[in-house]
Image (cartoon, rainbow, N blue to C red):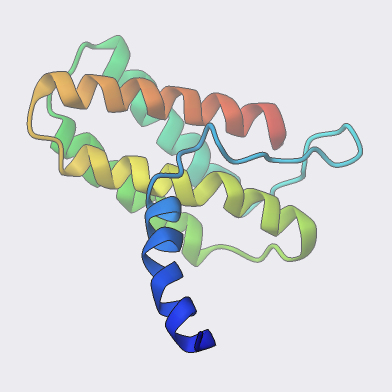
Length: 134
């Protein structure tokens, strides 16, 4: 059988597996048992995103589209300020990519109930960040 043909058959499986990955499935390693250091210029954007989410939850806000837009803005600033490299950078991306997907899901939510479930996932995502990065 032709290898190109087999590769074409495998592509849908690969993409569907990647599309179904969420932040709970990604295994972020610690730095020899310690948290990874995040560059100082990047931290404010992550902290501001977490503060926005905490305020949204604490105030029982329901404008999840606005929350998603604000979180997207913080992540855009985070990405622009990225100066990390090496293993710490790779581990941060294990957290960041699923986190970005959650925010995208929030911006596309069709109901307050759906948004509430995604908001809980975002809270968990920030807990994962806090457990692995400083």
